[in-house]
Structures are given as C-alpha cells and as structure tokens.
Image (cartoon, rainbow over all chains, first blue to last red; front, side, top):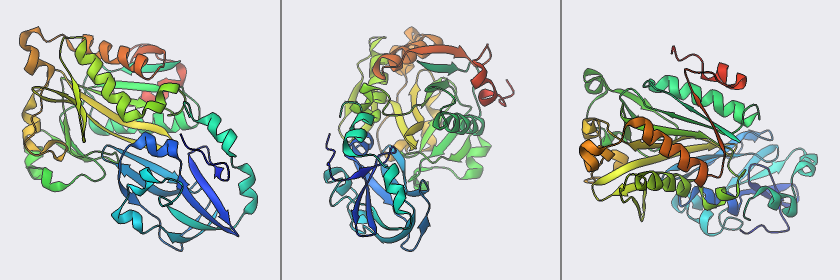
Length: 127
Length: 235
C-alpha cells in the first residue's frame, strides 16, 4: 500500500498536497483498493465553497459508492475533468493523475489537524 | 466485538432503509460497534445509483399491480429484486478496523457467500468482471454497497428459496441473459431451512471479516444502544 511521505492525510482517506494556498485533493491508495475498479466520479462544481468535512465528491465502482469529504475548507478552483472519461486513473495513479479537485484554502490551520504519512499508515490495516 | 440482529419476518424496504440510516449515523458517532442486519424484504425491486430504468421490464404501475414495490437506493450496483426466502445482509461496518478489511470489502462479501454455499456442498465461484457469487446454475449472491465516512451500508443479497419470478421483471444487475439461481434451484427438497443458512452467513461473516459476533434477534432482548435504532418496525 503506497503512502507518500510528503502529503497530508485525513481519517476518511483523502490526501492533500499543498502548492501555495491551493490544496490538491485525492483519495489514498488504501481507499481506491477498497472500492475496486472505479467506473464513475461525481465531482463538485468549480466555485463551490466547502467547509471541512462536507461531502465533496462521490466515487463509484460497479458495486460500490463512497463519499469523498473536503479535507480542508475553501473554494473549489479546479476539478480533474479527465476523470469523467477515465475514472480508472484513480485506481492506476491515486496520488498523481487520479487527483479529484483543488481547493483554495481559507483556513490554513486546518492542515495542522491532518495526519502525516506515518500516522495515516497506522489507520490502514495491512498497509 | 460486533453485533448482529436478525429479523424473522420480512421487513418492508423503506423501513429497512430507515433503520440502516439510523445505524449508520450511530456507527459514525461511535455509539454502537460494527453491526450486521440480516433480514428478508417484502417484494421489492431496487435501483442502484447508476441503475438504469431500461432494465425494468414493467412500469411503476405494473410492479404495483403484482405487489412489488419500486425503490431507488443510493448504493453501488444496478437493479435487483428482494423478496421473502432471500437473506439480505446489511453490514454497518467501519472499514479499516480489521486487518482483513485490507482484502477489500467487495472481495470479503463474495467470500462470505461462497463459503456459505460450500457449507451445503454447492460450488460457488467468482466471475471476472462480474461481481457477486455464482454457481453453475446462475448467480446466487448480488452485491451493492455504499460507504459514508468509511462506514458501509447496503450490502449483499443471497438467494435461498425465494420465488424467482420477481427477477423476471428486471434485467438483474443489468446482465442480459445471465440466469439467477437459488440454493433451492440446486438442492431441491434438500435445501436447508432459512435459519440454518442465516447462521452460516453470520458464521462466515465473523470469520471472513474477522469480527466476533454477539447475535441478537430483533424481537428479543437487544443491547440498550440498539433498542431505539431497531424500533419503529411495528414488530
């Protein structure tokens, strides 16, 4: 199970990478492996304001659907349009081409409450 | 430790769904441990998130006329049928709490069904690209679930001795030309009683998902934390 060191993680298996005040959000390798082959992704609209913990997206495989939560508060500034045609990118490259959306962070202190890779690994049995 | 609650009488779909939502909330809040509901539904056709209406072979009125309800469910998976004689397993589990969860929840549900079939000498197997548990006579277990905050709800149905005519009103799981079977299709008069199959499913749930089960009956004494959640069924 892949858990890159340089990312922030949530207890609900989202990851965040930071570039200035923009957070890129995706789901972890553990999360994608629980859902098997993804077939559909429901992404938020650009411009949507989320508070931390809001339901932000839905990822679906043939037999499963899981909610994805906003790991930080802020405005959605971009979504990964490639996922509409190729949701399997999340399975193939969860930390790269499988990113879901980008949020302009409004409360930077929320990142302090997120987990580092080592703490997150403790949450993933068998990782 | 986890709990199971079994229901002797078929539960209308809407009531079962409301109960699942109450348990889901309670599990997310940490008010209850992982809990599995095992029940039968009164006749109902349900569509998953991506369920396509063209897999329904009757109109809404047409279903009503033959005593089958129609519901949209926010689960994965496509259209399916539930009715008496079929066990429905609704595990409300926080995924990630057990090492075996890393095998994948879908895989674990399939394993439970295949092991339960094995208890009665039926060879169950997976088919590539088609989830669920299959036999040479057709599909016996269908799966569709949803995760909210990594707590599962909905789950798996398992055909024991149900009347298959309900499946003839749909294209099950959108799989054209694929037969559906029950244990009774295969075993005939040797088909075990429903209660034994329920116990097999719970035994294998406990092993496969690595959770010790305290088993309760819905109409018997329940843990206090569950009483108000399971109430409201008029049973």
